[in-house]
Image (cartoon, rainbow, N blue to C red; front, top):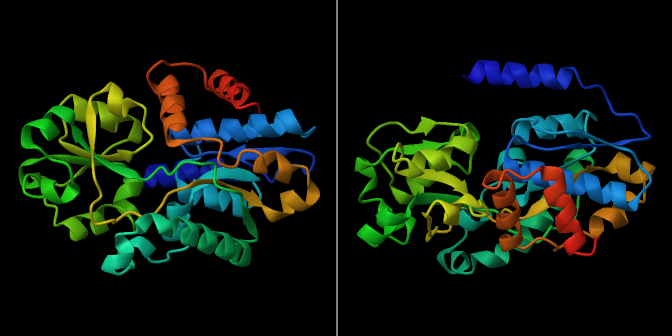
Length: 303
């Protein structure tokens, strides 16, 4: 599976030449939330500037999007600070590496991670990191709600005694990234009945609900968590860093089109965790059109 995926992504990027200077190209990764955020950024620019916007969505994972923006094939895409820190910058997970006292105050690391990512992206890549959009979409280690209630499980640590009898499933990127499966398993001593199944992110929650799997890694803003009666285990050892959603922008695009900055700055802290869950639910469960969902949300926020 790995070779065709990489080959397909390479061909996709090769077919996309650098954007014209008169337009802004927005990218996204290949899952619902990234698509929604990409569309939100696109509509915000269309609503508040005279710039034509081109959408190049479903660009696979973080690495592909990062290469696309470095190569000038896209100008902006939504990213998460924790992903930028660990998967792109290859920096240590500051929350995991911290002392016990610091880990107990892990929420304070949000500002530190954002500052680090912003400085490093500017220095290494000539990329600007926009202000946080307002929500923290950390990884969610999920089990079925009935399992959590029956075994009285609340934390990942508590689940470790049961995982040798469980089947796990994760996305491909989660299996490979430094803040993913290997570190999680080592931090919590997780072992499973069989090697984890690697599945498309969109299939994991249904496989868990249908008892094909017993534990998955999803996202805390997934609108299907309450809809499917799934339960998010607490990351009681603070393994995962903060994952604040932010726009990544080519500095050259900001220089050529200074009107981009106020348009994007207006999105700062406009999306709460609950807002994002609602948006994801509207697309994934209600099967509403992404453009319509985003248009209604921007109107509701006065944007």
